Length: 131
View 1 (tube, rainbow, N blue to C red):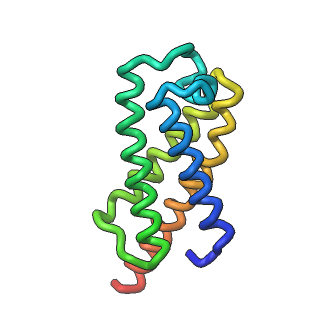
View 2 (view 1 turned 120 degrees about the vertical axis):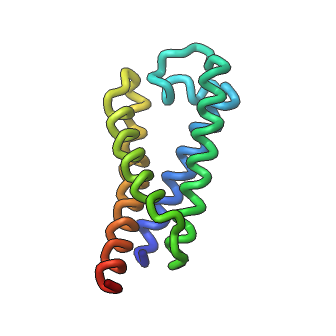
């Protein structure tokens, strides 16, 4: 992945996701209408705990994407496919949200999912060439 503009867009999308998920974890007012369907006036404790796990997952995605962008092999290999599937589910969930502000989250979700799809396809090509 050598396209610097695309890589910048991916990292900006990660930053937005971490900012938003961090806002839910901390109960920040800016996140109320941008997460969890915009249905809460105060985020409940169980949701904050779920978003802590979500934050860890996004941080792991940043690590995997960074390693891949430097040409370092991603292990385990199935994780990229899992990120593509989770990303597609995230796109659908955001697109179906009752909150208009949350629907905007489709854009960074799409960028990140496409980035992992590109990694998946480039790894598949390398495997086919090696075989």
